Image (cartoon, rainbow, N blue to C red):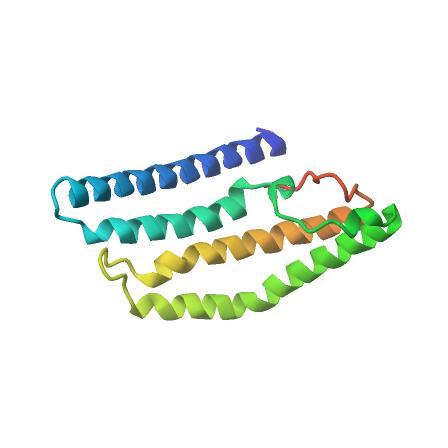
Length: 167
């Protein structure tokens, strides 16, 4: 399998995981509606499952499903300047984002591992497991940012998404 084929396969599996989380969240939501309004006996764990699945869905999707073109950007000034200045803007923003996430990563891991002593209220899931998705997200941002910096420094087009995995 080629590099591109491997990336496409991994992206499809990431989409599958996101779809499964969305399905679980929706099923728990429907179960909560039925038990609350039909049987007048609400379930507490469904709300916790929805919140946890939403947390995972947001960070998982941002890390592995959304591409560069899907990200929110404030580019009014960016497109008002010339190509050379856009390249500088793109490089500075990629370096700043990558450096910021890289600098905060040790503290992030420390905070997540601290939560191994606590569990969620209803499902009893250790909170380090619940919040570990943020570490995956941070690693993905660091890797994608570093690849973006390399792409820009090697003369790649800054206005089009690069061939960076996950974009």
